[in-house]
Amino acid sequence: MLSLFHYIKGAITLAFSFLAIIYLLFLSVIFDTIGNLQHQPMYRSHDFPFDLFSSIMFFVWAIMILVVVFGILQIVSGYYLKQKKHRLFSFIIGVFQLIEIPYGTILGIMTIIVLSRNSVEQKYQAKLGQ
Image (tube, rainbow, N blue to C red; front, side, top):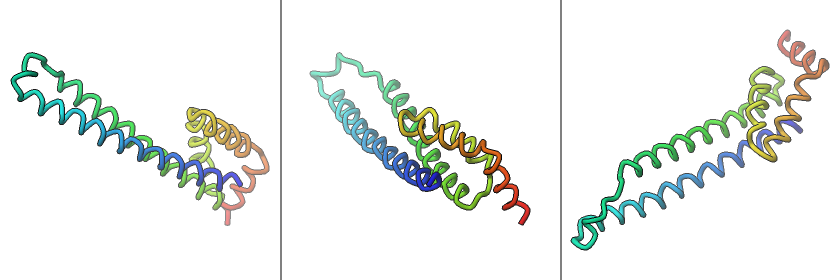
């Protein structure tokens, strides 16, 4: 069940990362329109801070890339949980999921609890020995 929830949470995280693409397109249209207005005589006296635009776009791209990578890592963690491999990797992903309030926090807590059990650790070691 835990691996299934990691798959679902990873897919949801990836889906929300695509909202950033829509946000980037929206910002590009707005700032492009403002840039075109700058060439008209009526708007020349108002300087628009295009450096601010570049900074905003950089941060949105960086956040989007981080969210996409984390969504992929959550799906990989679900795969590893199903295969009973790389317990530490799934544990670390569970710790990072604590940041994603509320569902990621619940999934992160459950992941940490399950992977901390001695019986689960023995199953991972038995799978490693095969």
